[in-house]
Each structure stands twice: as structure tokens, then as C-alpha cells.
Image 1: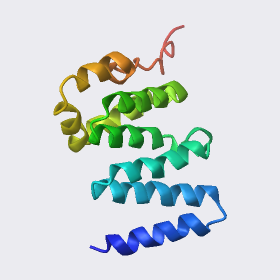
Image 2: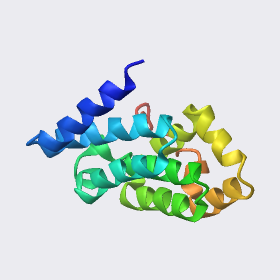
Image 3: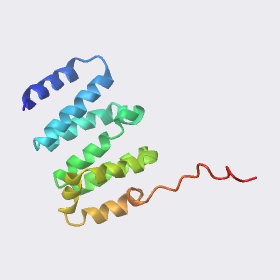
Image 4: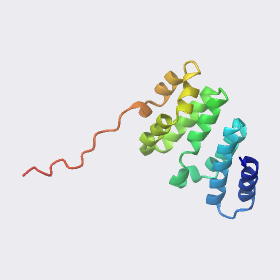
Length: 147
């Protein structure tokens, strides 16, 4: 109920913090608020700052910034840009493909956004097939009983 106050506080933190990590946290949270209010262009700008700062690649806490960008482009109906953001995320963080797939699975709103745009789901499958590939079975414990 205090979104305006929260947004102002996050903007202030972003402008005044000496720590890029704190600025990134503020940018991500502000982007979330803006996206929930339907201002996806500004939400993209917030997450783009995290990417442009290098933190999306250098700090594992911020790898999801490209995912957020992809979701906001999808909300704007810019499928090609959305897919490019998802592909960039997977190219830079292939080890996080399963976690990224989980982001899609965990959000009914995200799935609905993709489903209501004709051809989006099919394009996502073609462009980012690793999101739809089950993880390889664990080999932990193999050979423990071999003598």
C-alpha cells in the first residue's frame, strides 16, 4: 500500500549508495515495483543497469536481471527482444538453465504472458531448448557398492 514511498526510497538509495551491489538491489526492487505497475519500459531500464554495470555476470546474486528484462519485453509484446534476453542469460550462465526454467514454472503470470502471445512458446522452445530439457540424472553414489 506504500508503493510510492517505497519507490522513492529505492530511487534515493540507487542515487546515493556508494556500493554498486546496493545500487543493484535497489534497481532490481524498483524494477519489480515498476513492472507490477505496468511500466515495463522503466522496469527494463532498472534491470539493464544491473547488466550494464557488469553485476549480472560478476555477482551470482544478480544473474536473473536478464530474465527480468526478457519478461518485461514480453509484457510489451516485443517477443524478439524477450527471446534475446533469455538467450543471453543462458549463454552467459548455462549452469543456471535449470534454475531459469524454474522461474518460468514458478510463475503462472509469466506462463500466461507467454501463452497469450501466438508463437511465443514455440519460439522460446526453439531459441532456448535447454529450458525444456530435464536435468541429467545425478551420478552421486554410483560405484559405492562396487568391489
